[in-house]
Image 1 (cartoon, rainbow, N blue to C red):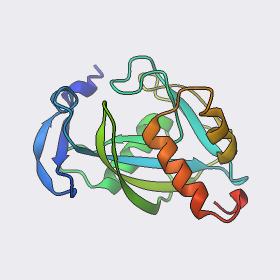
Image 2 (cartoon, rainbow, N blue to C red):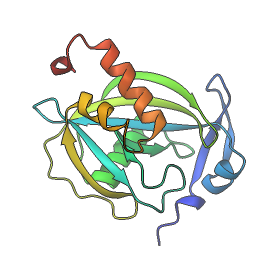
Image 3 (cartoon, helix red, strand yellow):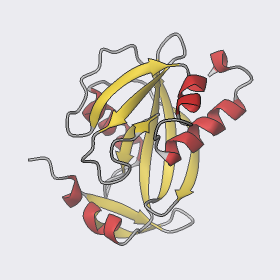
Length: 172
């Protein structure tokens, strides 16, 4: 049975130093800083795969997300987490490219993220417990859509950084 609340996750401090491990449920309840992997999945046309989270997700339920990924489990590297999450959520494997690290904090979430990108055309096998639907779109269109539909705020920050660092959308 799928019980994400019982996953043992890696806890860290504001400088991303490891502190210990706790079940995900307690990490969320206590709003503790943890690690997460984020994978931006592009196709050959430089469109980004945007997915809608299920209504049962523990944070940002029902929101659109610009990245596959998730919480880094205890004993796992960011890279191992990214590979596992890509396989679990989308049913694929791909060569990961490191982009940057970022710290994000809001009322619901305090997280050190490592952001990767990859290229994959699909087809994808969406994890029913986590992903309701998904589709490719230009990154700028996803940013525009975030002004009228709920998107994960940490994902939008990633997308804004990515677009700001790219001279043209086609160069991502």
